[in-house]
Image (cartoon, rainbow, N blue to C red; front, side):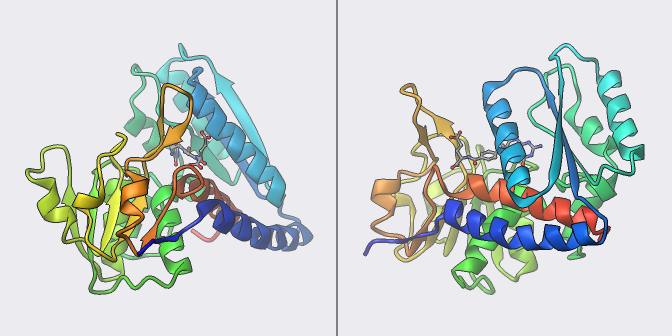
Length: 282
Ligand SMILES: Nc1nc2c(c(=O)[nH]1)N[C@@H](CN(C=O)c1ccc(C(=O)N[C@@H](CCC(=O)O)C(=O)O)cc1)CN2
């Protein structure tokens, strides 16, 4: 058996095409969705993701602005900028690209963004709303994964979902979103003993570790759905996920590739959240 590919690049393109019409309608009502992205320092990967966000915004008609700050900027200056953006009525969405330099507390930055402009869905108010099943901005990567599962009509209710990774931006929230749709959820992490014991029981396996080839065919159950969130750059410059794709593809029913899997969906869901913010829906 060879798994069906869930192609995030193509699905993201489909979503962007639909969003173009939504933006046209908003503009007719005098509202141009506006996203401001703050980029601190000169991390090449962050710079490339921010470029991707600018390009995708332009494609659907969202106005975007990137504010670049040096890596030496103080936490106070960054918080002041965020407060100014919170007060600026023409800005609908604010995103601070992560990671931030060590001397800046990420959580403090996230909590300074107004929940109504938090298009990343990282603010504790939005996380709380998500946990209680309320309508809100959902974190973009987990939201993208759910959209991928829905696009293939993969049933979630009653299924055993195993998440490897417990980051605030992927692992924890994807487990919650799956739970909200009545999956039985198990979290595994760096301290989990005998990982295979858990992963081989998964109907849906989400791998968000940040290390290549953590999962191979021995870790997965025949016919399971495998979602690879890892983006690892190898020495030769190529990208690979956390899953040994070539071996797992023979055993899974569905699998996401890297690149062209979850990554492009992250950006598509950011655009969705920005349009939602412009509509004033939270
Ligand atoms: N404020 C945020 N910071 C970060 C987030 C986030 O959601 N909000 N997520 C990641 C990085 N990220 C978006 O910011 C992101 C990562 C990867 C991709 C993507 O499209 N990847 C492509 C490959 C791109 C390449 O060639 O390098 C793919 O997988 O096909 C988009 C967005 C951390 N920071």
